View (cartoon, rainbow, N blue to C red):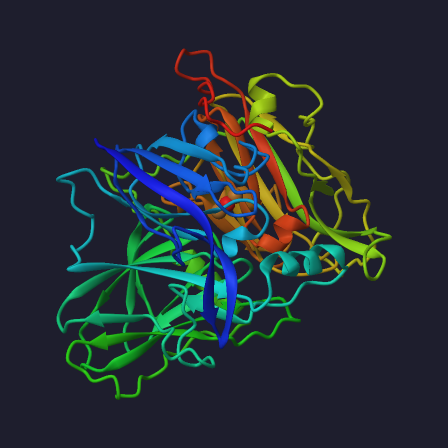
Length: 535
Ligand code: C2O
């Protein structure tokens, strides 16, 4: 194992897209930011120095950070922000994980432009459990706004209405030639006939689940969220914000130019969104004048495709990479995803949207929860988050527009060390209908079941997949349906869990787990580093 050092300078830089230039927050002046290349077992030191006028914190999405939440990054959950003019070194080990993950700002909406890939190569001498590619390419899907992103947040949180959609989607920061002034902002991937490519695809968009396809070429999915899958071939993938997908692509078609394209899956009936971003897969020797062909992407409301695609995702579950699914459950949690409105005298229409779990909309604290937990500081959070919703109702029945008593509070759930947890996330028809990609920090979990309608505790668990369910860190809860996950609480600390649609997080669709220390010497949260930013 090696020590890998990176310097991240947070700087504002003028970047032009879609015929306009605007200042954006970047790492080292780059957009998207630099890739972190490491090998399984490495220790990574990333010194972040903040030269921008915004507070900053960086999250290493999907890295487990065993006993080491101090390096996890979500602002006010595991650390206070890195202030302008200050530095903090994220110091962590990459243990027992290999594949594609990513990093992003975890404060306000700054991850709109502050993000990059993390590539973890397997141990020296350990091959991939699939045909070795000739080349690897990172594909980061994102969004671009004309306006200042922090203004967009204000629109979204100070009114009872959603904010403006982004003005474009992007592939490696570029919208592609279907957008105005974007000919030169087009990502081109050059391929050679007969070669195999590993695409490391990351959805870093703020608010959109995305389809991605390549004209004329199938993709073989081999890994999601840095966990190997049973390989399967598909013409399009579906990827939610926070998720990663590795696919193999063979350059085996008539040499030419082919569009890669991405467009949102928005199953909420109100949204129509056709901002297709494109990049070009170009065979070596083909001139730039050849017109590329567009791939067929599923329609933005193709729920059938989404359901059947997600069903195909299975852990590889080989002797070398077993799926250790917890078979017995110590703690059953059932969280409903709801929305409410509160009155807000300073807001435009006098109301403010809130999103909630079990009718609780999470209020951000001013001291980081991990510090409060470690140093036993009272009054920062309450560890009384309910295991069930206050009153059961027909969750997916006729939409109720009434505010069913959404409360705000910094409330978390305490989990005993090494206990196995089952969490059922149940979508509801309160006010709005949309699928939600939930992300848990500090863990991977197994997606043991999912379905449409109300979860039935008498019947549904019998249908769980406890053999080779997908293990991952971010999972979609389908519109008007539920998803059940299981994990073993073997990583002590405070771990954030939230919807990875940034808008919903802003509305309060988040909570945290406080996993208690174990009895063993090496089963407790490590002491904080000396340079941890003060609150
Ligand atoms: Cu990728 Cu808490 O986020």
